[in-house]
Amino acid sequence: MKQDKPRIYIPLLPFSALYGMAVWLRNKLFDWDILKSRSFPIPVICVGNITVGGTGKTPHTEYLIKLLKDEFSVCVLSRGYKRKSKGFVLAEKSKSTIEDIGDEPFQMWQKFPDINVAADSDRCNGIDNLIAKAGNRDKKQVIVLDDAYQHRYVKAGMYILLIDYNRPIIHDTLLPAGRLREPASGKSRADIIIVSKCPENLNSEEMDRLRSEISPTAEQEVFFTYMKYGNLYRIFRQGNNDEMKPEDISPDRHILLLTGIASPKAITEKLKQYTGNIESMVFADHHNFSREDMETLRSRFMSMPEGRRMIITTEKDAARLITHPHLSEELKPYIYALPVEVSFLNNETIKFNQKITEYVRKNSRNSSIPESKDADKS
Image (spheres, rainbow, N blue to C red):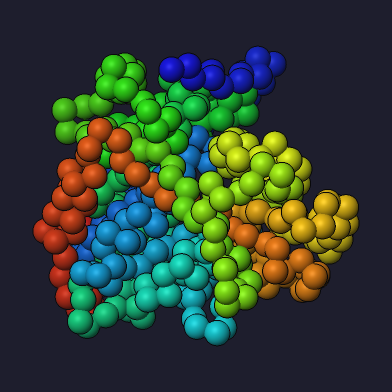
């Protein structure tokens, strides 16, 4: 199966070389223990990547939440990209907004209101606060760090590195000529490597080829996942017929697809399986929809055939729409979110689940015990 090679901007390669030197020096300062990494006395799982853009961090983080939340007190810590607040913010019922914690953390908190979700650009400070404020005396605590692979001031107990199947890191180069945040050799810090966004019919020969390209160490596990879409649901519940299967979209249906994500290609291709009448409003990842955007959304929707039109968006974008002050009331009954979740290929779901739960159980303690001030150094 063919993979597209990432685009390299040749004139920018000298700047990539300078950037690479800075990244190399920073990593060495941590390796040499000049810059200090802190460990913590509870399980900390880091989910991240070495590529700019979407590799599926949020769906994989949500997978971990679903796996662990019944047995453990799960806390998700993110920097809260593009939030308007500062410092540590713990999501609170009927109070917190996207502006407080960021769009992806808000999405996870809306879906899993029984867990703790927080934002802090200083992950060490965030973990300290979560241990102090969000411990559950009935369950042992585990912290999932969202997008913190390069945040080396924290030494997580387990690192999960995501690599997008469609953007092989071995063919990419460093920013700004390419899309890598750090050299591909940074994968050596991972305990688990997941090749994400794979075709659902990826065969074992292709998996073997990819595993050979990645060249994991003897201690590293490599898994392969694909994105599975769920049922569409109205983001403003009406009470009846709020859900529909994607396959129930009729060929004469007209869809206005609204996205502000890193790569809308997959969701577009999914919907094209059911209808060719798709118009797109595509924005950059984490885009904050403006009043003008909402007016354009209404204008384009109203120009579609009445009775056959609908708006479809992602769950991340839906989180921004739900509280948008300029979204037309007329549109609300027609806006659906298409959820996506992770599935493992090669019948390795049980193997992955066991690896995660065994790590958490082995390293758990009662979350009400105060953290030691003399945290281990890496």
